[in-house]
Image 1 (spheres, rainbow, N blue to C red):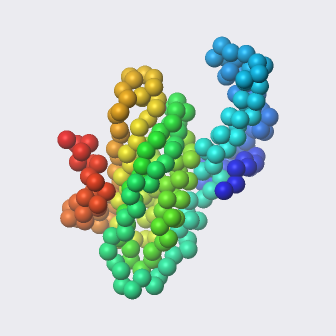
Image 2 (cartoon, rainbow, N blue to C red):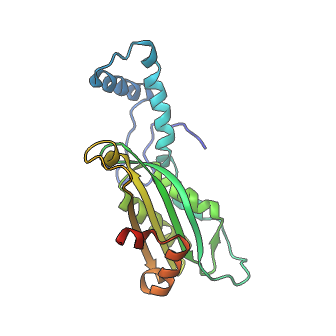
Image 3 (cartoon, rainbow, N blue to C red):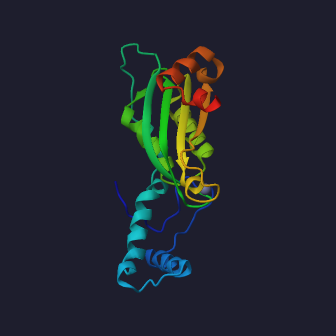
Length: 212
Ligand SMILES: [Zn+2]
């Protein structure tokens, strides 16, 4: 994976974003350190702006990739397999777009292929490329589902995301242990209760646990 952010328009963004330089980013971090009340020139903090910039390159690497590209290489020779394909417990780390606080959780992805199936690691890549952006859980959930639906054109897609939001556990209402569960059901998963139930059973029913 490349971790080099170049000043270029963000792929998939509605407006082209011109990125500031690395140096400007590091200066911004230095400003925040001073604003927090510390001295950015003391030894322990001297390299912090550069380290934070590097960390951001990893955490927000999703802006440099096009999730749809992961799904373009498909296999059609599946010996008539047309049942559900599920990848569960895909761990992800994201950041909330309101507080820049970590969102840590797992996604479960299922689809009902028509003729095209995709390597399962590619589904995890799609999750990762949306997670490594500033996010709202509901939006990320829908983006993952819609991308799979659009590129693979399956009979249906189901995506459930369970996550803890550190903006809620470490500040604000301070509610550790709270998990937010969201789901997007498309096609057969939306229309057919049996299909949906089968998927939810495979992933351990986080949705009904959250309801009850
Ligand atoms: Zn937040």
